Amino acid sequence: MTRPLHLAVALDGAGWHPAAWRQVTARPEKLFTARYWAGLVAEAERGLLDFVSIEDSLALQTSLPDAVDDRSDQVRGRFDAVLLAARLAPLTRNIGLVPTATTTHTEPFHVAIGIATLDHVSGGRAGWRPRVSARRAEAANFGRREVPELDPAAPDGELLAELFEEAADAVEAARRLWDSWEDDAEIRDAATGRFIDRGKVHYTDFTGRGFSVRGPSITPRPPQGQPVVTVLDHGSSAVPYELPARSADVVHVTPRDRDHAAAIVRQVRAAPRVGEPLKVFADLVVFLGGDAAARKARLDELDGSEFTSDAAVFTGTPEELADLLLDWRAAGIDGYRLRPGSLPYDLKAVTRGLTPALRRRGAFRGAYEAGTLRGLLGLPRSENRYAGAVTA
Image (tube, rainbow, N blue to C red; front, side, top):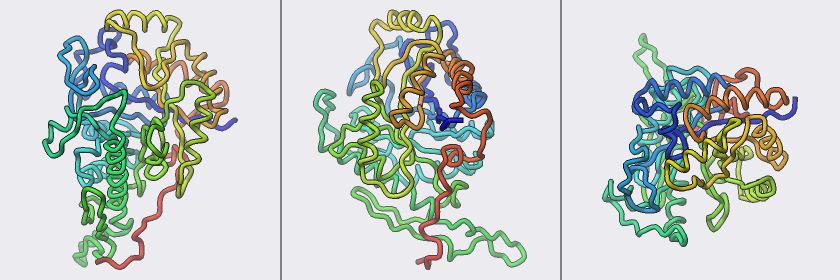
């Protein structure tokens, strides 16, 4: 068997096309039910995917660059991704769960204990996709900081650099909190009356650019030690891919073709990195099936404009997509995070069409081979940075 591909899906509402909720196979009346999301994740697990990521933001979805629109013909509203993932965890057994949580307006301590809790309730299958926000609509929901109007054509480089630096600090604070309890800090000996070994619970004393975190965490160390951190990065910062190289285990990239994928991989590998090599996942929006192009065209017509994305948009059969994924793998791509154009239609095409096609080529698993998300991704369980240190 050749080197197997890693495969994940990104879940968002009724799908990534804004008119997907109007497709005949969609279930818009179920969007805000746990049963709907449980069905999607069960389908992804049935296809033996590595993980699902769940989108989130701190303002309503919008078609405008930096303002709330007044459209009523697109999906608006969503669940909190971390809370949703925790609800789904007991309903699954093998697949990883990677919610999005914004670093710009949330406290690192709060996010860290949420992801640690998710790792405990899932038995070691949690991840976190940190996200930054330069949008005024999100800032207005908190009222703590002034954010200038975002110009997509010429974004404020200084502001973006500040937000990415803040995100790196947030991830570092979370990682220290996850390590603040040693693995054997819990004693739970009723006879002696000792529940924890206080010498194995540590202050983190992290000071970042905009916040400080004393620690320790209120949640014992996660089963994985360090839940998986994934970052979507378009390589547009002053130092391309600096944030994922510094903070993440997996980087999501958005190549246009194989040559672009190879160029991105070179940039990722050139970024300063300590520890395990970064896993490089390419993002693709997918519309699958013999009628994929026509189906997308119908959705475009319903929405009133042609759908485009930061990621490449693929329309074609699962067999054709399998060929593309294997072609890009030769450029150094480790895996893919597919964004289904419509749900559950294109998700089922992934799990019931694409994964068998890859398996026939010897490029995808036939069974889950590990019980944790780190294990599925080939990442070792991390050492605790505070083990053996004297607590303050």
